[in-house]
Amino acid sequence: MAEQIELGEGHWIEAQHTAHIMAEIVQEHLQRHPAIQQTPELRAIAHRAVNALCELYQAVGAHSSISD
Image 1 (tube, helix red, strand yellow):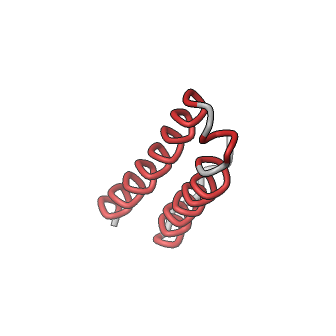
Image 2 (image 1 turned 45 degrees about the vertical axis):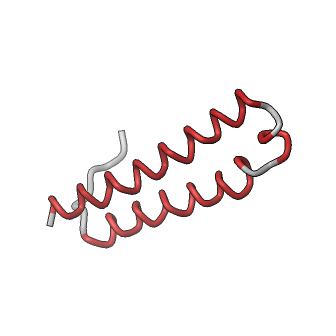
């Protein structure tokens, strides 16, 4: 298990930013890829992945406001 550290505001900002960047990468490079677009089951998985990362982004933001 990773060492527990005291979380500061910067940790929350970084986590939220990383979730945003990952959602953008999945959307730009996977969800819009022709092989993914032309395969319905893969298109659905990529869509869920983007949605999950967007949900994570929102959850981190909500959690950070509670932690402040």
